[in-house]
Amino acid sequence: MPHLATPRKTEHPIAAPGTPRSWSLRSAGGPRPALVVWGDAADAALDRLARAGFGVVTPSAGVTPDDLLTLVDQLPDGVFGGMKLSPVGVLLMESAPGSGPGLELEGKGIPWRKGTGSDWDDVVRWFAERLT
Image (cartoon, rainbow, N blue to C red; front, side, top):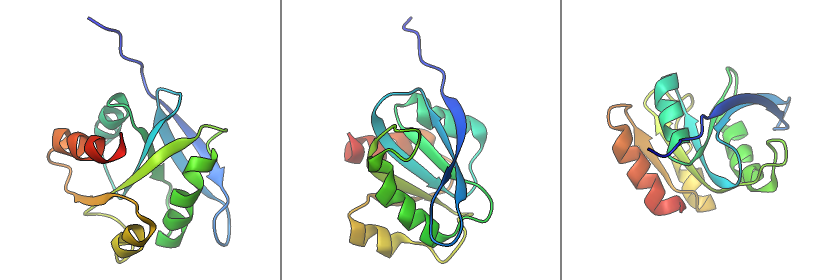
C-alpha cells in the first residue's frame, strides 16, 4: 500500500484590503492546485481534499468576500511561505459569508461551484477535472 502524505495545517497572515487577514493552508507540500473552501466544512473533509492533492485554503473569522477575491489573485504568487498554488478553484459552501462571489470569480476565470458537504468524492472529481 502506498504511503500517503499527511497534510499539515498552517496559518498565514495575508495582506488584503484594509487589514491583514489570516488564512489556513492544508497541504502535503510542494506545488499543487489551490482549492479555497469558502464557508464551513469539517476538518475531516478538508483533510480529504488535501489528501486528494489540493492545497486547501480556508479563511479565519472576519474575512470578507473582497478578501477572498484578493486571495485568489495572490495564490499563484506564493503568498503561503513562497509555495505557489496554481491553478485556483473555489468551493462555495452553503454557510459562506456574503452574497456569494460567484460572478466575480467567473469574471476572473476561476472555476467555482457550490457545495453542501454531502458528496466529497464528487467535489474532488469536479475540481480535479478543472484544476489539473
